[in-house]
Image (cartoon, rainbow, N blue to C red; front, side, top):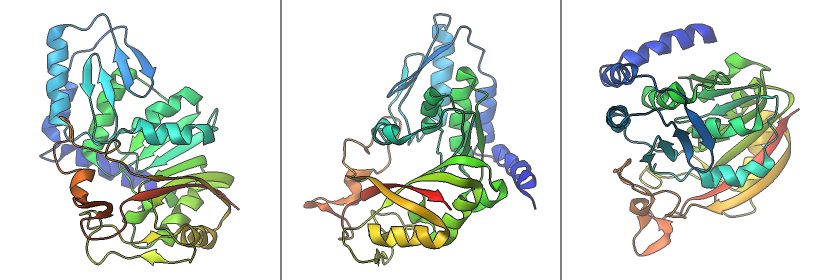
Amino acid sequence: MNINEIIKERERWLSWKNIAPIREAMESLPAIDDVEYELGDWVTLRSDKITESQKERLQTVAKMMMPWRKGPFDLFGIQIDSEWQSFKKYNLLRPYMDLEGKVVADVGCNNGYYMFRMLEFSPKQVLGVDPSPLFRSQFDLINRYLKSDTLRYEMLGIEHMVGFADRFDTVFCLGVLYHRSDPIVALKSLKQSLKKGGELILDTFMIDGDEPICLVPESTYSKISNIHFIPTITALEYWCKRAGFERFEVLEVVKTEPDEQRKTEWMQGESLKDFLDPLNPDLTVEGYPAPKRVYIKCYRK
């Protein structure tokens, strides 16, 4: 099955019984005229033409789409305070971005928060890839009013990036690699989607140390079961080299703090505070080092 057939097949996921009512409610929302947007820390939509009735209906649909993990968004005064204060990561990476006129992919894009923010650079196209029909629906809700033709969202995974061979100038892969049981295969898939000389901007969990080794959680890490390998920076560099990348650059190393990831009205499940040892926040509940991320840039040979 080629990539277009996979995309067509996965569009059917929007008809799942838990997703279809959300889609129907969204598609019944009335149009709103004269919408303006602002791409700051909050992705903000404004219009003097929205009525209170329209705003109430929009809030009802947005609540149907909970949990909102990435953001925040301000939809005509409806403030969706997401679990992640995603502007912290975006603003950290922003000085390293050069996207004007480029074809870009955001792999593991969630609801597209970073994609919307990238519009400030006037890229040629941004493709978001994430296999969640719920997050796709959140994206569609925002873009229903923002109306960007530059952005495209497909319900695919990192393994499908080989179907976009030699397509992208820049690929972002933020917070995905540790979910893959074979990180080198995942990196190779990302590499194949890049043009020669194209850049990968990646972040992943890391552990301290100079040796090329990894933490392998026994069962869970921060209560997450699908965390497979947490490397030292040296190990990550070796993975990237073996996958066919060069010019490995460390951009930032940042510990995840409770003001960046937390429960809110729009995400009421467990969050970072629940994942850490209550007596020692430098450790997870399992006794592993608390989450720390490394941000890197490397290039396809």
